Length: 412
View 1: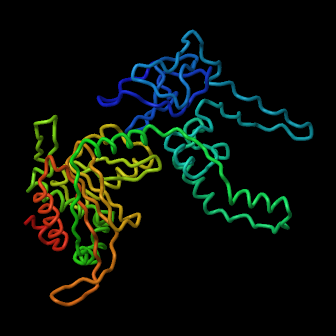
View 2: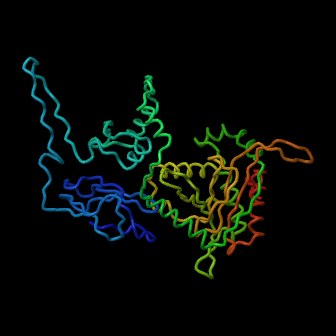
C-alpha cells in the first residue's frame, strides 16, 4: 500500500497515527492510519483484507507513492468474527444457573477513538482507556469524547491537604521555579507549511499595509434591533463577520483589481465572483477555508457557512475541496484582543483585511467629543497588483458601508 495522490499541490504527507496494530488482521476499506497533509488530516483505508505489516512509522514524512504498509492476503480472518470472544467466567456453585448474554466480540475499533474524537481527547487531556465507546463495535465517537472532556472539566478539584514543608520539598519547589529544561518537538506538517507560506509571502510580494478606523455604532444598533428576529428566523446570531464579509464583497465587485491575483510575472487573473477566505484558529494552526460567492449570499447564509467551516476546522475534518480557492481573506485578531496588526498576505491572493478589537474611545463628531465603539482596520496588499490609491479607496469604501449599513443592504 502506497501513499495515494491526494491533491495537485500536495507532494508529501506525514503518517500521523496508526489506527491498526502491526500484525493485526484488517478488512477491505478499514481505516489503517491517518495522513496529515498541509491542508487536512485524511484516513487511509486498507486496499485488501489480510494481515497488516508496517513499513513506515508514525511521524514519518512520506512522498506521494511511497510505501506505507504491506498486507498479507494469504492470512484468513480469525474464526468467529474479527477476534475471538473472551470466555465467560465460570459460575459459582452457590449461585443458581442463569442465562448469561455472551460478551460482545472485540474488534480493532473497540476502545479506539475516531479521528475527530482523538483530537478532542488530545486537546482536553482525556484518556481513551477510561471511556466506554458507544459507536460501532465499541468505537469512541466524537460525542463520547466531548462528554468525557466536559465531565473532566466539571469535576470538582480534589481537596488539597497541607504538607509540611521540609528541606526536600523546598528543594523541589525551588527546582521547579528555576527550571532550565528544554524539549524539542517535530513541527506538524501544517505548521511547517504555514511557516513556508508566510516566508514566501514576505519575500516574494511587495506587501504594504494601509489603516483606517470604523465607528461600529450603526452595526451595534442594527444587531440590537434585529438580533432576536434574526435568530428566530434563521437559528443563528447575526455576527460581525457576515457584515464585514458582505461589505468587502460589495466593494470587491466594484474594484476587481483588489479581488485579482498575479499569475506568473505578467498576467493578472480577475474574478467575477468573491470567495472570501475566513481565517480560523485551530489547535494545529491557522486555516483559511473560503466562503464561495459571498456577493450572492445574505447575512444568514454567510453566518451558517462560516459556522459549518469553523466546526469542521476545529474537528480536523475539512476536506481538500473545502480548503481550495479564495480571492480575498478576512482575519479577526480582535477576538484575541489585538488592537492593531499588519496581516500577512494569503498567497496567491493580493489583499487581506484585518479586523481588530472594538474599544470605546473618544472621537470628535460634529465638533463635539463623544465616546463611540471604534475598530481599527488594516488592509495588507501586494503593491505589484494594487496601487496605493486603490488600497486606500477600498478601505474607505468598506468603512462607509460599515458606518451606514443601509447602503450595504441597498447595494449603493
